[in-house]
Length: 58
Ligand SMILES: [Zn+2]
Image (tube, rainbow, N blue to C red; front, side, top):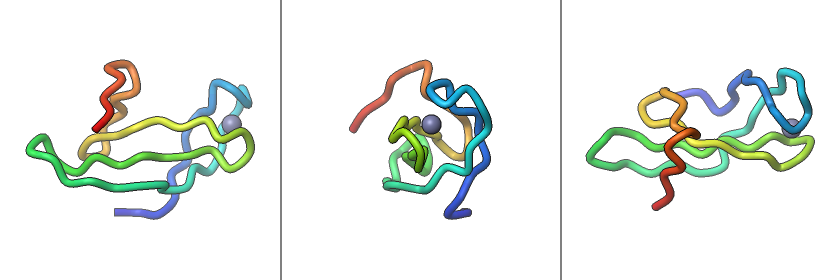
């Protein structure tokens, strides 16, 4: 899994290169937290799928 991810940041209102802030293995798969280096906005993916809409925290 990559340590960086190009993703749209809604706070910056542009694409940013997010840093992997944390990673946890769940029964659902690998949960990864990504953080925008510019504004500290973060979101979570599970097995590479954006799950920010479901607001999962562990
Ligand atoms: Zn940002």
